[in-house]
Image (cartoon, rainbow, N blue to C red; front, side, top):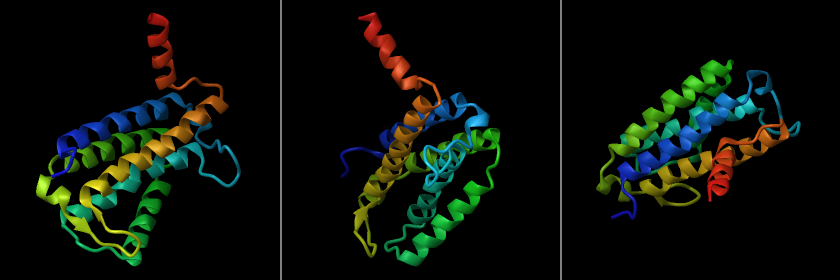
Length: 171
């Protein structure tokens, strides 16, 4: 039994994705090409990456694959990169974040406890399906932290910061 069921994980992912969508909407489209440094993804590339990157989980856990190899993972990451590269406008990126986020969350919310507790082997580390799915949320939170810093760099105060400041001011 996991310490956190599929419905709670799905709801938690929806919260994380919702906060990402807020950032995607707040950053002006003319800043979607902004890069913090030359060797990192632009705002638009980063948001498109978040929209597409967790979708390989649907295949792995939907078909209950028990083992992954580097070739499979590389193919799925290239597929996600190709899908992300096809998202050119802010509207397309926000739509993909919203639609794919809900597709992922709905899938996760439908998994049973037995499935979540199964182990998937890989060349690097074996993990439960639950840990793998939690990793998708952690991946998004990592990149969202980058986006929040970028918001500061372009002169915006992130919504989560504004919310915290309002709570502090209300005390």
